[in-house]
Each structure stands twice: as structure tokens, then as C-alpha cells.
Length: 416
Image 1 (spheres, helix red, strand yellow):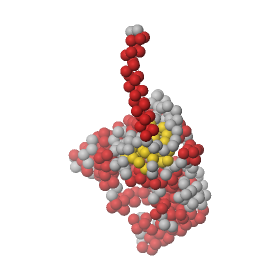
Image 2 (cartoon, rainbow, N blue to C red):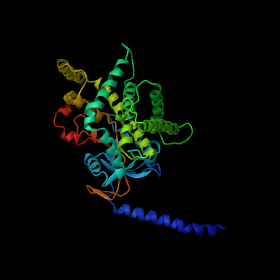
Image 3 (cartoon, rainbow, N blue to C red):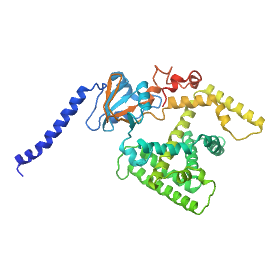
């Protein structure tokens, strides 16, 4: 085909693309978007945004952008136009309008590794159904009895494994504790047995890929994580098939129906694929956030002896009262008496920023304080920026659990 004919054939497509681009730019000029910088084509500003930084800071990227553009700005992150919010009011507005004006919208790589039925990536009715199943399982009555007892049991198990004068990693011990607790709670798996240890090994590989760049090439952490995910799902499916067979035969061993797998099989109509993704996503959510929070609490407490002393006094007082009553196991009333303990937990979550930001998408055009958030744009509420805002928290980078003993209304309003 002659060059002139090729150009003529290509011309309509080129003109169409130019027209779309012009219309898009015109729409943008009519909108009052927040100030900001869209960065490089395709990449945007993603690399700078994801550059590692301390948990008790918001990082150079956020500091520079807030200083230049304010607490609400536009950018191009994860390959999409994005509104970034370090504003407590907008963050609260986004979360309060979940499902009406905004919805969860994580990068495709997250869905690829956690599964399309993971609660992290589901939206709408299906997300509500999955969430309802999980919440019904973790009912208030169950928390008061079974779960609290299991937490104490696994805590004592970890403590008893420590040898006198030994040195160990608090982070590793926290991960071991939370994984064993979740494995028991979800599939009635006992700690220390070969199948639990093998599952833990695969899960560690899986987690390295979740937090890595989504490069699906041989040898990459992401590829290894996908392989481990397949192994984990086969393991869960085998457990599920075994449980179904027992139910058909009328057998019930070791109260297995009290775990999440038994609950889902008995009380839901989910498909095999949905059950597998649900269990994997809950194992991920329950293990990762809890283990990081425990490790951070230990890290913060080591530099605050007065907080350690007050914690010790609170727990010794509860233990003494139980001894007088002839009680041994912790119960719900004991937990409710741990008021300063709750202050330590709240301050750890604020300062540690286990969840730094959320992924959301605008379902329709939204106007907030004069700024336009176009339909389809990604929205990133940056939780850590609110937690470390000196206008909201006095000396925000200081670990101070006593701040939660005063009126907590303005404080809890900032937390997700």
C-alpha cells in the first residue's frame, strides 16, 4: 500500500484521537480541579509516591506536595488521574459516602494476587454480602467467648516458647502469633504441626509478592507469590472437600464447625472460588495488620517506660481481682476494664499508620469545597497525613497514649 493511502486510512483514527483529547482537555478546563502535577505520561508520579519512608512521617513526596498545593491535590498515580486528600474533612466525607459517591478501587495487580472475589476488590452488593458473612461469623457473642479464649491461649503459647535470656525478633514473634491464631480461627489448624508450618512458609512468599511491584516474570517476587497463591488455594480447597465429606457422613470432629470454613459451608451459598478467595483475603487482612500493629506497639512502648508501668499496674490489678474470685481465664469484663490498654492500641494505630492510604474511585461527579472530583477519577484518602497533622494532634510524632484519656471525639473523627 502506498504511503499516501496508508496516511489517508490512518487519518480518521488520528482525528478521532485528537478530538477525544481536545474534548477531554476542554472538560478539564471547565472543571475546577485541585492544583497539582500529573507527572510523566503513564507513570505519572507513582514512583515518587511509593518511595519508602518512616511510619511516623508522611514522606518527602507528601510533604512537598502539601506544601506546594495544599492538602487536596491532583496527580497521576498507579496509571490513573487521581485526587489525593490529606484533608480530614474530605477523607471523612469519602468514607461516609462509600457506595453512594465513592467505591473501593484497588489496582488490578491487587485483584490479580488476592483474587477477584476478595473483599478488598469487591464493590456493591457482593461486597456487602461477603462482609455480612464475615461479620456474622465474628458476632459479638462469639468474640466474648471463643475468640477471646483462643487469643489468650495462643499468647501463652508464644510466651512459653521464649527461653530465658534469649534474643528474638518482636516482629517475627508477632507474625507467628497472628498467623497461628488466624489459621486456627479460619480452618482449625493447630500451631507447630507440619501442615501449618508449610502453609505459613507459602504465605510468607505470598506476602512478599503482595507488597512488591506487579512484574509477572520468572524469578520476580510477584510471580513467586502467584505460585504460592495457587498452592495455598489448593490447600484450602482440600480442607474444604474434606470438611464437606465429613458433613455428609454426619461427622463433627474437634468442633470444626466453629471455624470460619465450617461457618461458610453451613450458612452461605458461595461457590468454591468465592470461598477460597474469601478465606485467603481474611487470612491476609487479619494476619498482616494485626502482626504489624503488635510489633509497632512493642517498638513504641520501649521508649515510654511510664506507659509500660501503667500497663503493668492495670493488668496486675485485673489479675489480682480474678485471683480473689478464683478465676483464671480472661473474660469480656476483664477486657472492658483495660482502659489504658485501649489507649495504647489507639495511639499505636494513629502513630504507626498500619494503613497509610485507601484506594477509592468517584462514582459520579462530586463537588467538595469548590473543587471538582470527576466521575471515574481515583481518590486516595491519605490516612497517615491526618494522623500526623499538627493542627489536629499536639506533637503528632510523639507516642502519647494519654491523649486518648481526654475527650476522644475529635480524635476518633480523624481515624478510619
